[in-house]
Each structure stands twice: as structure tokens, then as C-alpha cells.
Amino acid sequence: MRYGNRIHWLALPIACGLGSAALLAAIGQSVPASAAGPKTRPDPAVEGERIFQQNCSRCHIPPMVLNPRVTGTIIDHMRVRARLSRKEQQLLLKYLAP
Amino acid sequence: MTRAVTGLTPLMRDSRIANETGRSASRLFLFSLALLCFVFAGPRMDLAQDSKPDQTSAGYVPVLSGAFAYIQNSSGGVQSLAPQINPVLLVPMGKSLLLESHVDFTGFFQRRNRTSGDFTGEVFKTIESAQVDWLADSHVTGVAGRFLLPFGLYSERLTPVWIHNLQDVPLTYAIGTHPYGSADGLMLRGVAASQPSVNFQYSAYFSAHSSIDQLPAERAAGGDGSMFFPAARVETGLSYQRSLEGYQINNEAAYLTWQPQSFEINLKAEYDRNHYGDGYWIEGAHSPQQFFFAPRFFRRFQLVGRMEQFFVRNGGGHGLSDVDEKRPEFGVNYILRDDWKLVSSYGRLFSSNGNSNTWNFGFTYRFIWPLWPGKRS
Image 1 (spheres, each protein chain N blue to C red):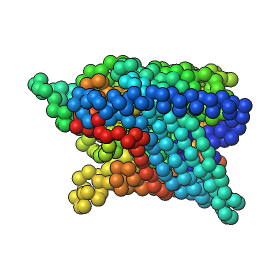
Image 2: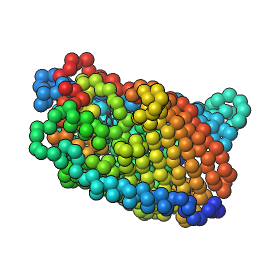
Image 3: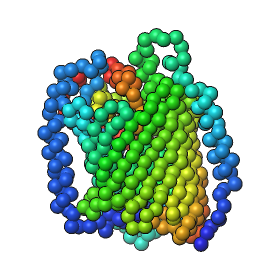
Image 4: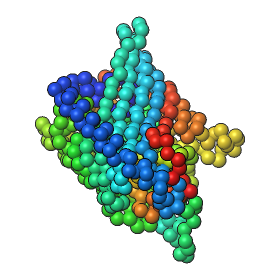
């Protein structure tokens, strides 16, 4: 028994709209703020905050309060999900547990 | 598994018929994991306290994290109560091994005669993962043991009760996760290539058949590949899984997440398909950061909306509905602190089996407890 065999009339335009807007945004802003400016030594606090906002807040709602004693274990646990490079991992550790 | 509270989930049903013969093998497996953790945890403690990795005070002690939650659900006039605890144990062993295990205890209680009488039910225990992660480098992480299937957006990322925005799992959830949600086998994953502008991630796994009590799994192979544009906060990916047990079927998913900063919104969308059905869900969550009145109070609100549809193919079933369904759902959550959240939602299911309303109310509490009395390192 079928309830309605066609996709909701709003679904396709929403999916196409969302997809193309996201793609345009991705192409338009493809260089992160830190990589755009002249080469200076990254400030761990600023970079750590940026990495948290970009990589962790995809799945978690900030702010997140962490006991420094557990921070290393947790970043080891989350690093694949957050797609962290070794450098980003170090900057984030400095930011979360200075 | 932290699943919908709208009725007995397929996983719960399957866990009831789990093969009893493997009980002793599962005890042996868990005992060996515990032993490993005690043998190897010690050296890492010393390392954590003596060395200062690149000038941070970050410690590497074993952690027990997870959540308590209590969700009260009303579906088509039938009430159910679902208290749950989902502990996650993390034990770092040496420099590049991490042992992790997720267990879920979900109670499911309904009135004896569905709408009248006292509440009765039972508590379901599921070992979702018991795995060793080999953290080779950011390009490769090897996983061995029992792990959550990395399929689509939901299973591995949004399943925890303190993370998902709406309590009901999507109508297509069983695609790629049916029947157990977890695999017993090996997985390789990591960041294949990373540029400041875009980064590519992969995972590839194989699961063996297992009828061990508490650790059941089906033979399957699959993988996931995704691209992430950090500046725009856009992620898009594809998941594929071939189920190699009984009928060999393909499960496929395509997904997109986007957090446009200017709109303070978190968007997620996924399309899933297999032999028994296909469907999509689109979800948006908004927290007003700059509300003109009492901004500190209002920024803790989270307004959520999700639209989803499921279409039957070849009779459906296998964890999916056997009729076409459609469900708009709305939620209002309030984040009391970063660990406490009040949740509420309303959804209406349109189905030829009968339309019904679904209400959810409850709270979630996330905990992170260090399991070692060490000082900061």
C-alpha cells in the first residue's frame, strides 16, 4: 500500500536550492581567514578558537567546558571526526588546555 | 543504541532474539579488553604527568563520558517513558592506541494496556562498540573490534542523545545500519588530503558475521568519503555499504551539512536508498545569538525543524516501514548549561497505516569524568 508515491513538492526545490547555495558558499569562501593574510606566526588562542568553531561546532554546541586532565584523551578521540591535522590538533590542545 | 522512543525499535527486537550460545565468548572478549586496559593504561599515565606535549596542560587520563537522559514520548496517544544511560569509556594506551567502548542502557516502559494501567517494560542493553583505535597519524587511523557503522550523518555522529536535536530517528535510519548498527571487524579511516580550503576524509571497513551474545553483527563491507570546506563550513559526502549476508543488497547515502554563519543556522540533509526503500530528511536548527531582548537567555534556545519522507520499494520492511510515510517535525530545546539540555518536540506522521502525532519531552545530561586521580599534566 502506498501513501503517496511522489516526493513532496517542496523537497526538490529545497534540496537543489540548499545544495547550490552551499556549493557557492564553499567555492566563494574557500580560503580560511588565517590562510589569507600575510604569513605570521598563528596566535594559538585565535587559531584554537577558529578550529573549534569550524571543526567541532559542526556537531557540538559551543561553549564546551573541558577539564584539562581529559582534554588530550578527548582530542585523540575526536580528531578523526573533526578532521584535524597534527598542527590543528596541537593548536586546539593549546587553546583548550593552555 | 540511542534510538527513537516511538515504539520498540528493530534493534531492541533483534537484541531479544540474540543467540545465547555466544555468551561465554562475549564475556571472554570483554574480560580481555578490560585486562588490556589495565596492563597498558599505567605507562600512559606516567607519560601524561611527566611530559608537556608542546607546552599544553592537556592530560591523557582514562575518561568515562556519556549521557543520562529521560524522554517522555506520546505517539498516537500511547505514552512511553524512556530513561537511558549511554556511557563511553576511553582509555589511552601508550602514545598511539586508544581503547573505546560505547554501551547503551535504554529503558522502555508503556502502560500495561497501552492507554491504561501501570507502566511496565524492560531495560535493553546494547554494546555499540568495543574497539581499539590505532592513531597512526592524521591520514590513517586503524580500528579493530566492534565499532559503530560510519554510514550517512546519523549513525556515528548524531546517535548520542545529548547531540541530536530531535529525539525521533529519521524514517530512513535503518538504511545502512540495519539490523545492529555496529560492525565487528576492521576499519581504516582518516584525512586523505588536507588543504586550507578543502579537506577530504575517507573510511573503509569490513564486518564479519557474529552471533556472539551482545556483540552480534552481519557480514558487510563499505565506506564513506566526504569533502569539507572549513571557511564556508560546508561538508558533503557519500556512503556506500554492501550487505553480504542473505540477500546481498547495496545501501547508499548522500549528505550535506552547512552552517552559514550569517544566518546562525545549522543545516543537515541526507538522502538514503536501498533495495527496500528510499527517502530523505532535511533539518535546520537555529539559536538566536543576537536577540534584541535578553540575548543571554534567548541564545540558549534552539529552534529545530525537520521534514522527511520515505518511499517503499519491494515491500519495505527490514527495519523500514512497509508503507510510504512523511513526517514534519518541530522542536524547541533549551541549553541550561553546556552539559544540561531540556528537549521538546512535536511531529506528525502521515502514513496509510494512519496519521499520528508524536510528542517528546525530557532532559539530557552529558558527563565527562576523569578516571585517574592524576594532577594536570
